[in-house]
Image 1: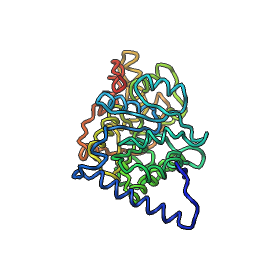
Image 2: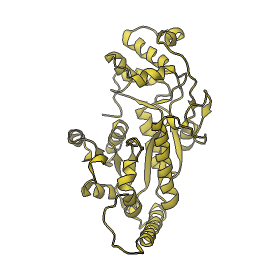
Image 3: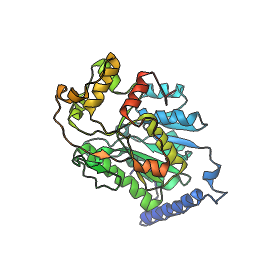
Image 4: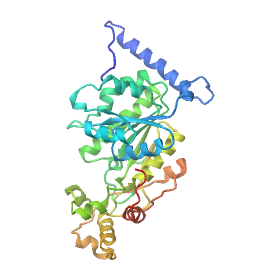
Length: 340
């Protein structure tokens, strides 16, 4: 893994590094102790660093900046970085394939109390580029870290024939992308077990919200092949971006390191039924749900139903958009939260 600074050569390098890591584990535990008034964490202004300032991360960032947080993070192009800077973000261009991130990125990360990982594994081998470049730094240099969230996906569960799955269900992913996601989950949670990094994993359903929903795709007549293939699933997990953001914020307020959370709404309807509802909103008609799947050429596969009980019971979540109907209707009526 990449490091910020080099180490002197010698036979004791490995043991010295382990000793340093264990010292930082002790510091991290001390900082997270509410009774430790001298801990750095208790004096820090809350700040979030996002690896990957994409759709969900920028939504969360807007919510937190309104509450006085400083939000920094990475994006993949100078143009994107400039746009986000105008919105109040502190940005750094990061391309894993183009070499080591700049020192200023590490320095900004060092000053943050919370970290969000939204960059998926890359390449044919499913490399986690954040771990590749930042693992040692997170272990050795961030004893003040109070919360780290890793955004994963419900696809790690695989196909359960329509059964209800929860966070304790065996993951039997079939696609290479889902397998890579699950492997990254395990690597991040291992950092929690070995070094005390306050890792939380969030398995998200399909993300939708303002400017990014089936309404936009139907209106533009631009359904991708993968979206068309989802029509064959009887059950599809999804969640409005505003509800994802409220789950992340609730977890930040009540950290439970090592915990895994499913983030989905209450209605795992098939994509074909959701598409029919979207078309009805755009045309002013009513969806013919009895025939919509047949009209769209669907042959049902069961898939899985994903439980969201844990976010409700442990984080006190009351979904703003518990169904695709309520979520799409809000978008149709020009609701733009959490982006303004």
